Image (tube, rainbow, N blue to C red; front, side, top):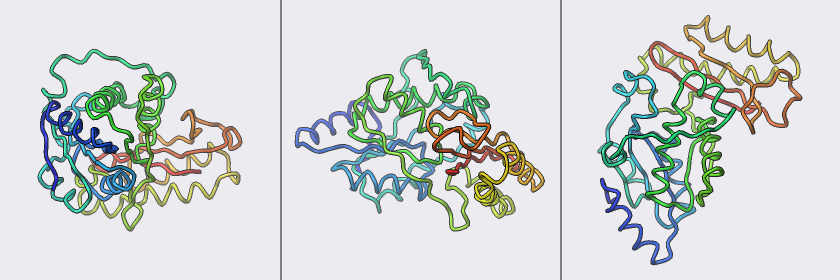
Length: 279
């Protein structure tokens, strides 16, 4: 039976009892609108820990678009119903005032990690992510925390946060979960129209086709191929970058890094979709 908790004090008291019994804690932070990708994170957490905490909190300070915040899907009870079929001990669903009783003034410096891709096009986004994740880690004190690789840059930022703040939590990155047609699972997919949903898998298909061109065409040619293919099919590509998987800096030739990642953000109608694959 899942226990839903809305206050920091109540959650910490419950976890204190569990820790006294020597139980380990796995944590899955979410903004709700849960899908199979989130549930896979919960499954990983339950396999590796005695206690599983899932937070549901739409974090206002990581949205630099007010309309995007207002339209973000919310269904806490529906989320809890989904979690009933997956081992979850606590759902932490705090209010904004509970999370941020005072004005947020903390500012992190992630260097070049936050200057590219999402950081470039969504100023302030990663600071908002870091603030809420650090706050949640302070509240839950998990042994392990689980994040999806779909948000590849966010995962890198969180790893950096743990390193710079010397936090004891172990970060586990879980491969992207996809729909049967390849579309990366995302809460934002709910906002696609029927026609847009049919078209959306072209992002993943194009990335896969592009990866086959590695070492056969130049990096610039492959980037051009991805952007032109999607733009002529009704998308509006915000960026497509081929980056070093470690520091996320763009590369100009194939042998510049041991491991490469192709990362993209594109609008389909009013919905912004992101994805990435290993090259």
